[in-house]
Image 1: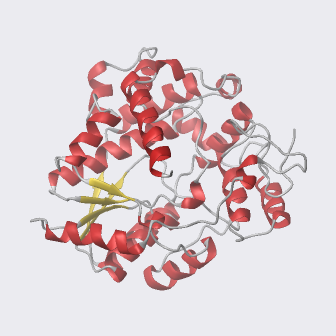
Image 2: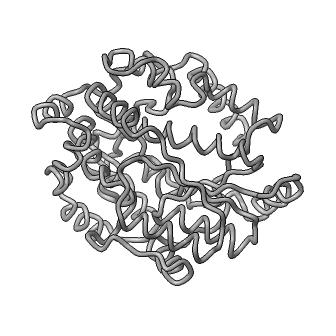
Amino acid sequence: MKTCNKCIINDSYPGISFNEMGTCSLCVEQRTYKPIGEDKLLDILQEARKKNSNYNALVPLSGGKDSTYILHLAVNVYKLKVLAMTYDNGLFNQIALDNIQSAIEITKVKHVFCKPDKEIQRKIYRNMFLLSGDICGACDIGTKANIFKVAKDYSIPLILFGTSPLENDSFLPDSIQDIARFKYILKKSNDLSRKEINDFLIYPNRNLFLFSFYKKIGKIAKEVSPLSFINNPTDKEMGDIITKEMNWKEDNSREYSKHFDCVAEPLTNYVRNKIYGYERRLCQYSNMIRRNEITREKALELYSIDDIASKPDNYQDVLSYLKITEEDLQMVTNIPPLKYEKNTSKINRFFTRLMKIKKLLNNR
């Protein structure tokens, strides 16, 4: 396995290449991170304030670092009228739940806790894991559906997501949030009805084109990731800020704790590494190196401590929750990548290509 001599990404990453000096294409093509601009973010926020609504923005809150920081920005910095919401994915870390409670008490915002049918949710996670090796896509789909429903129910014009530039390049090559793919996989299950699947989806016919059109005409809330517009603090600085302002608590079991809010994250990373040869934390550490937040030596040390190649300490708890055996887990780790990619939505594929072309033209 070839590993970049500047970051720690390896040649399992899709589309990666290395030059004669052993530097990966992500590092070679790296440009200094340039935010879109806070002035543009302020214009968007001002437009939201003009809407006739009790709330300017909805902030999805997981109790993790990024979403808590977004709530801090929205309330304490930009002085927005905010509704916070949390989707109960059934796999919350208790520290994250405590952070959510602390954040809403300090900011005094109204908070909505969306609780789906637990048994249906568990069956969906179980089937998606057994058939595709992933539950994060199903969780993301359920979360986003509930976010849009809350925004609609409360007539909120803007959703502020905590998506961070640090997450760039860390997503799977499979289209795990594609609704058509999701429904195709679950057709293979024998313990889920179409109604149960559609109830979980809330918007069972959602596609990228339809949602983009609805946003344009104002029928649904606009999505914005503030961390793409502003000069971001480092991962450590962000933690320091929300610790002071929001009484946020870190998961001290590891030095860097992205996604600790979900107890299944270590297992999903283990499975991703088995299937793809790389996973989320490898990409995040590599991004931190490129942003000069940590050295390559430090990243290698952290990654060694994470020990991604070994089953995490709590994996049996997650298997028990999903009613999955050790034999099932072994089978899951042998699922080939991109197994269901041909079953994704044709509209989504076309729309994604169209947006890529538009972006290339805009960058000329």
